[in-house]
Picture (cartoon, rainbow, N blue to C red):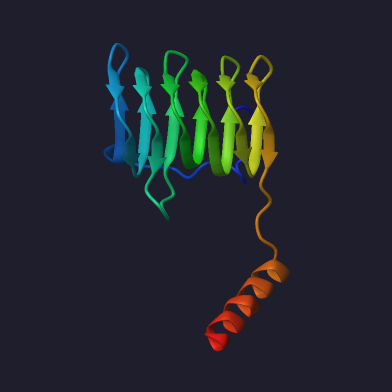
Length: 144
């Protein structure tokens, strides 16, 4: 979005798989989505991407969320009052404002973006950690 580095960009999602919450619309309640969700309006509730999906959440400069966000990829240019947990790539554009803790793996943050909370980097599991987890699970199964 902000530079020519395409290696770490969010996956492309077809227009047919995109949902829109338009400006002037307020949704009260939790949302679970897959594909892409573009928010120009307001959501009072949590937003969760379907487990195991490669979903993308985009919040425009007019978009607002009051609640928790969980998604593999997110581009935020509006405001969020709640924790943001992005498993892979998070882009904070110039008008982004987050009041809450932010967990991310890859972060791109433009000048002007603001976060009032903790920034927590979540590193991907290494091969060694994956092997240790598998060994621990095997031990637990054999002891049971």
